[in-house]
Image (spheres, rainbow, N blue to C red):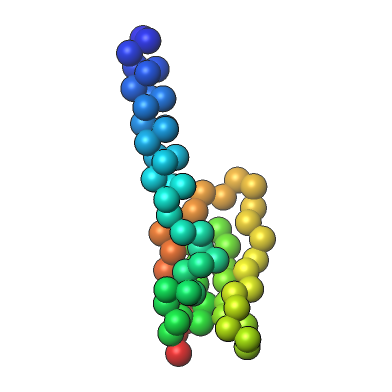
Length: 73
């Protein structure tokens, strides 16, 4: 039982470390200048006229996925 709990804790810590290294969804536009609108399944961001990103608010229970481009130039 203790070994199972320790294993679960190790997995949780490893996944949190990987998540901490990833860029936030808001930064996706910096690396993808042709993308005008993108999402991670929780928030939607759009490139504003000045080139910055405007993003929606995230719901408390949302689990983000990989970011994908919804609309390109």
